[in-house]
Length: 127
Image 1 (cartoon, rainbow, N blue to C red):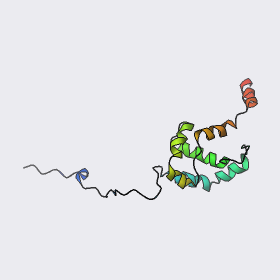
Image 2 (cartoon, rainbow, N blue to C red):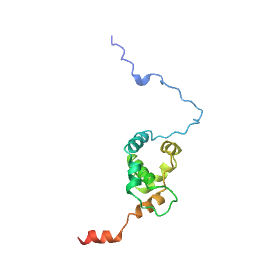
Image 3 (cartoon, rainbow, N blue to C red):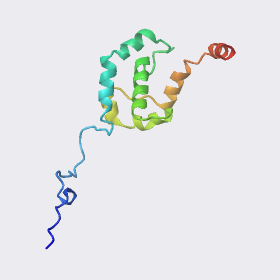
């Protein structure tokens, strides 16, 4: 007589219940981002940026450190282009974790364009 096969764990009941009530808290699927941000801030990256990078012409909008932190977050979550900022902007939980909203793709593009120096490009091309 053949013994009954051991019962698979996949045949068991759920170990949790799904609550049909929406959460009141602000949440995000990007739960690993705070670890990155904590490391960045612990290493004083924002302070270093403020001390060594002054390219903004106006006081409006985000400061350089906020842009740099946002670019680091974009890279960490697998962003491939500036347009990948848009889903991050829509994530209220991410903004709550960061303590600031994420810049738009267009604002980020304008920030990066401030690094463009035609004379240096020509000099590098001619060398």
